[in-house]
Image (cartoon, rainbow, N blue to C red; front, side, top):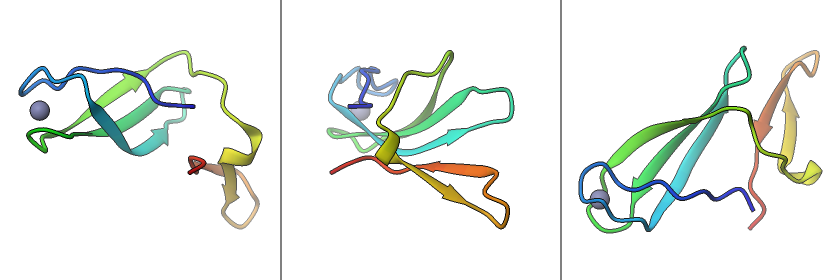
Amino acid sequence: MNQTYAACPNCAQLRTRVVCTKRDDSGVVIRRRCCFICEHRWYTMQYPEVAINKSEVKWVGRNGCKAEFVPLT
Ligand SMILES: [Zn+2]
């Protein structure tokens, strides 16, 4: 469960979904969101980050220094 509620800035609809999650070097989690209703897309930031399931993290890169968030379906 990594879904958080963020109202759509375009139509104020609360039913939105996370399209993509990125974590920058300072530990800020950036989410790309999409509105179910008007399909408006925008970003949200989250800090400090929330705990996620270990199996949702995929290590990438040559030396394994980068992590990617892979939500469980
Ligand atoms: Zn909307």
